[in-house]
Figure 1 (cartoon, one colour):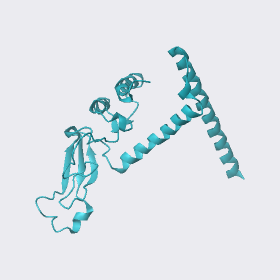
Figure 2 (figure 1 turned 180 degrees about the vertical axis):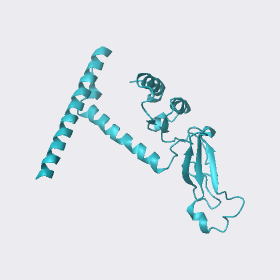
Figure 3 (figure 1 turned 120 degrees about the vertical axis):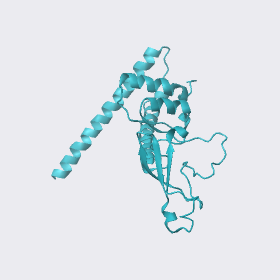
Figure 4 (figure 1 turned 45 degrees about the horizontal axis):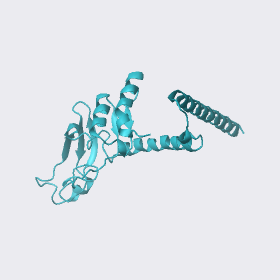
Length: 200
C-alpha cells in the first residue's frame, strides 16, 4: 500500500521476462511510470514503450509540437513516417500544409527529419507519440483498467483483510479464478446465442 507503482515496475518487468522470456512486445503504462529508468528496462527487454509524457518543470521546446515532432517555420507539425529498427531512428516527413508554402524551398524548411530515440528515450519512443499506432495501443489499457475496477468494486479486492500474505494471495487467486470462469461462461453463452440467432 505504501510502495509507489513506479518503484515496482522494473522488478515486475524483470520477473515477467524471467517467467515468460520474449513473450511480450509492448509495455503500456499510465503517466505515473514516466521515468527514464523504466524506459531503459523496457528497451533492454526489446519492447515498445507506450507511456504518456509528464512535463517536469520544462519549458516549451521551440521548433517542436506537444508530441515532440519537429515543426516547420510556420509551425506545422511534421508527419511521423516510419521507424528504422536497425538505427533506432524515427523518420518525420514534411507536412502536407507545406506543399503550397512559399518558404518550402527555404534552407530552414527540411523535407525529412530523422531523430534517434537515444536523443531522449522518454520523448522519442516507437511507436511515435501522437501517431495512430500509439493511440490505438494506449486505448487497450482502458480495457485492463475496467477489469481492475470491476475486481476492486464488485469482487471487493479493495477490502482484503488478512494477517498473512499467503491468505491474501489465496483470496486474490480465488477472486481472479471466479472472475475468469464467469467471463468464460458468459462468452460461451454469447457465442451459442449468436449461432442460434444465425440459424433462425
